[in-house]
Image (tube, rainbow, N blue to C red; front, side, top):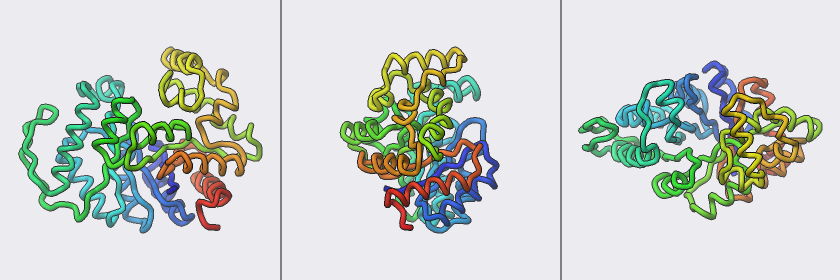
Length: 321
């Protein structure tokens, strides 16, 4: 199983680059750049990371079809892969109505259908072929000036059952959401049989299990509220009435960390002592995860995040001492 980190979009671009360099020097395998609105632009940060690293895979995890014309996405993906020397991975997802429609004024309809059509069109351009079709209301007739020297892998960051099924068929892999447990990863692998699974993980190490899980309690409550009663929470063994209540509180602006105990945090994060975290990493590997990417919340010192992950990975035998 490959291990990586994802710098927070709240960090400066320069700090994200430094975190990526430290991750590579420490022996980690991947760095992923997310694009939450309205934080740093993912392609610029990923390009900077690619330019100053040599071995790590550089992933976009994820960008969406609404804010970039498919030709622009192909241009950026082509350029990034050239800078990275063939180390890039392009992650795309459908985004959500709050970002697209409410914040940016972009009509948000048929997200999974659009994502599938966009992916097919993007592949056409990245193969160096001419694209002639209507997509998102645009009559397109164009081709890149040159095709990338390889097939740039495209993965989907999605979580609904129809989206997972479509992504397993259309993409080179699936990227699973924050708080995806080993049980959920195994269920995705067995149910949808994607080519590869990448999973985002929330991560914390402390001298005691309780201290580490306290660090992630509010974060866990928030993201469980986003997922609500769903396969993600069900496959982790989270009570579905609790998941629904966490979602209700999130939507009403109420605090919910008091509903999330240590066992709940432990079920959906990799947290605890170094030994606890090592067991969590191995559980994800054994569930069929190909790449595990630890998210950075932008508050801890970046060297602490990398060094903590490396210590757990060495304990688990996933990185050489």
